[in-house]
Image (cartoon, rainbow, N blue to C red; front, side, top):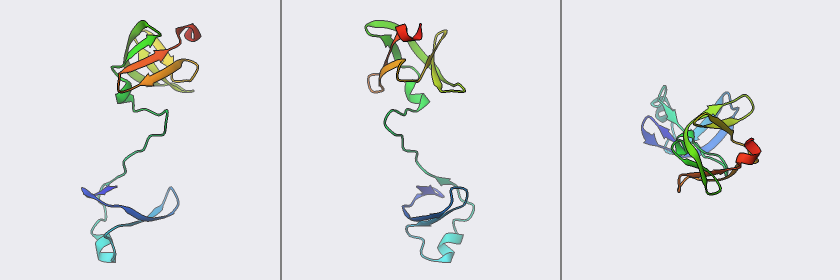
Length: 116
């Protein structure tokens, strides 16, 4: 975690999600803590398996097996799921529609038969 531009480790987390109580490494006195009052707190997000940043998918080539479908131009938030915009197509980010995603290879394999 980064607080006021400096890295800290969380030593203890208590409270509630709405009002967390956090003990940071290197903050052993009230004076240490008060010095951080009002500072920006940045917590790096951790993605689970099967989760992706939209920016990682934009620009990926979309294929159906060996047939090229297009390139992802953006990710769209739909009421039921996220979808990839590929030209005029919206491809839902669901297991039945997407066979595989290889961010390193910049390639997404979809099932166009499922998509109709």
